[in-house]
Image 1 (tube, rainbow, N blue to C red):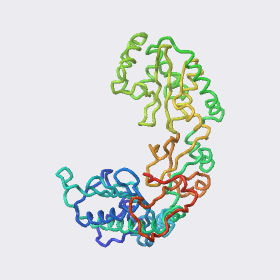
Image 2: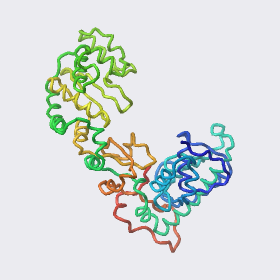
Image 3: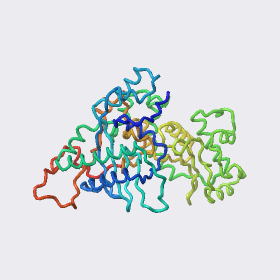
Image 4: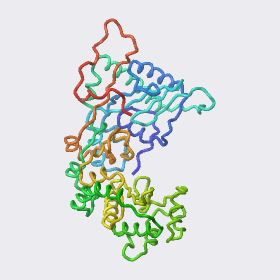
Length: 443
């Protein structure tokens, strides 16, 4: 089913309507506008926002604003007429359980340009008048409506901060699906056993414990006992041990070279062209460095969903390093590493502690806002070893909320550089506990 084509000039701005419009933005690049109505509204919004403390970087002001969800009939009108009524009603109750929807507004200034983003989506920016930023006129009445709401919301938030109401209101009412948190993986597996089964498969608790208890001892042994020299055949035999450990297709009947050809990335950088028995040829090839290929990617995948086996050397000799951080490949990574160690080969496991902790369920899964794709979200958890991410699923929200740790919501404060009147309104000196550590904007 597809949503209705929206061409009607009669627009009532509601939270579902704005969410749908934001999701429909076709490019991550912000669209510049020289529409005088849009430009004037952005200028007024930023002037109002300058009463708030700068978050740092392009004079950014970031804050939460509410927008009424409207009626169910308005929500229903946004959906395809053929969709079953019970589906639409369930979506309405899951996505908009309260009277308002929440949107994170960011207003920024770069030189003479003003930018607006909502929920991390770049909405629009003004031009600086140069030929480089010259754009076709874009008199979109929907954009005018959105920017007008952003201006109104900005002024309302400034008033709430000045009255000492904003931060406590946000802390008490911002939906958890908009927040950042983390949950212990074992707790998540208790709530949702299916992800555990997908993640671990037949990987036993004994294997997980053996990995956890092996990594330090094996690391020390790896640094004491190296291989004096290595050939292409030696490397491919190590690959074969790994393929057999994960029961890769053909592991019982194909040669090491055939297995590598079947399962590796394919861009071998000339590796397979070497004399298979020459230690000098292999050493010279490794010393020459990468030429743009992926010769060590022995189980192919995406940027973060492959498994690599590296051959490394120093003046003490050669050793292997196994690497594969993604949850979906962690079991294969662990089994390849354990098999190499069991075969007596010097082997290290990259991110060993993190991976071993993951496989016994003792690490944390980062919870990111619903508008954020839960991939490559490490920047939301600075200084922490969080390597898996998720959104808060509506059907499992209550038990996750209860068991998760939720990070403080960044405070929004008044600009200390703006002179106050002789009789200022109350400032926000008394905040709820969760605000104590957070005073800067969260991107």
